[in-house]
Image (cartoon, rainbow, N blue to C red; front, top):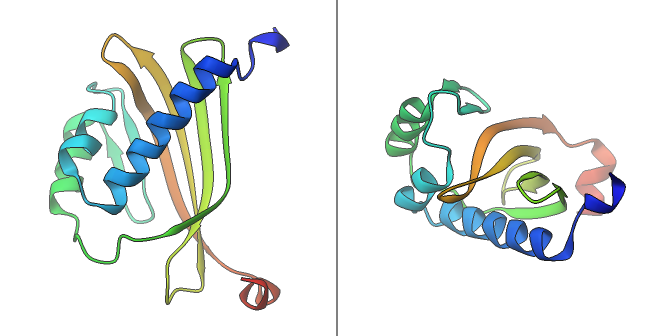
Length: 135
């Protein structure tokens, strides 16, 4: 039902969970990042250079990832909630000194422990020439 899309209280909860994730990501807060991914072998994270299946693989990646150069600027962030327990969060990002545009998609599920990412995908593309001048 359309009236269940972006219910204000659910959307506010999801926006707070997304902001918490972003702060943990850019601050290399591995414990929070670990917490916010669903603790299941069904969790998936496809990154710019890696395909991770299961919470253990995602956790191992986080622990081994370099902690430098994590700051980024977000734009075109769209959070959509569906009912009370399901949401998507999509954003574009850029990093200083890089011409690439990053794209991040997350699927979130409300669990007994709170909102958790069940699937994520990160990819990079080169910015079109006109985007370099507009930024």
